[in-house]
Length: 236
Image (cartoon, rainbow, N blue to C red; front, side, top):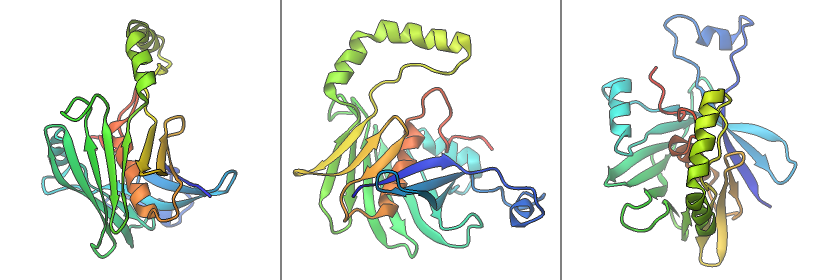
């Protein structure tokens, strides 16, 4: 049975005099802005399993945004909105020339796995390539979009440009997007899949660590954000 992980904006804090309201008091840390929801099987009930937040380097937000341009990313998966317990951390091992390698570490710093993003046309193909390597498990490789749909996309590019311009002028923020679906393959197995309709990571293999899949869900959304700002690109 497959499970689904989805990055979503956290609910607004309730102003009821409780802990959530206190977290927004002057001088208090800002609430964690995004969560990962987990759904077990078709029609299952969703629940929040992690709270996602950028981990800023020395130099704060300006330093993070400067490093971000090279492909660097860093964020934390918290077990609770109060940041009491860390579930996992994503750090950048290297980022240069369109290729970035990220390590996902557990609560005690133990390695969970590695995620590698190779940007399209960076030397290894026409599509963006994502490699997922979980510690002690087989490597899985996925490509952004199917080749057929990319051909269709480029053939219809003049129409797509017109749609985009019309969308901006109309102010509805809706435009056709390039192919974004990713299917990871490991031999004959398909352990992971990213569906672009709802920006969901589907976990098909029981051996996949959900923390690695959750980190992947959040990481993809720092790159693929259509007609909007990626969740980790905020200036405040």
